[in-house]
Length: 286
Image (tube, rainbow, N blue to C red; front, side, top):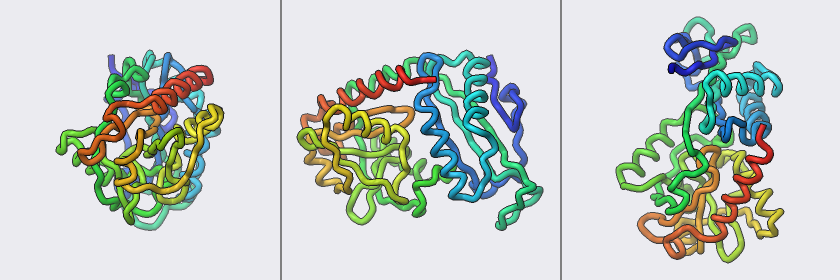
């Protein structure tokens, strides 16, 4: 069965989904996006994604085409029309089609382009990788300096994913000025004793929605949290390491640049965080 996708107010078969060649998302990467996970047919941490979407749009001086209630209805309709049980909904908003290519932003009369589609991932929460952990390599962080805006400018993260694939590992961690910023599509953490260490929010990293929830749940579980930068060397000497993202949830990292982290196997702290995160997200899903 062909997927049903949403394009500018209409639900259409994917083969009929069309966006103009003059759209600024296509020509300039002038667009932002969000990915919301779906478990058991329900949306995970949906309100947080709406807040970040509004922030990204505001930072780029783009208007938000929908209210949170309208976004929720579109997402629910996509879940229903595609019979989505486990998977993700990708949302993208561009500055629209001004009718020709120009570096200057178009005026407010040009409406944003809105596209959403589903990706079915059966058993998303039961990813076997969570039992064995990820291996990562470190690479220089060559991205622009506004990583807090969730734009579609993903060429360098894509190159980082390919570097990891060529190295036979799962992901790359970006390094700038001697310290880890984040993964290619995730936030990075280490664990020393019972302390969770991760970078504070800034323009240097994406303000992860899963990050917010995991740190809140960790604090509620009486875990100590320290928000500061850490080096690759410190990460290699940590007891545990992990990443968080909307699709991987909480994923252990067991090797960095060929050096085992801790025992080289997923540890108890990360396993507990993944458990309490998934339990809470399922409970609060909409």
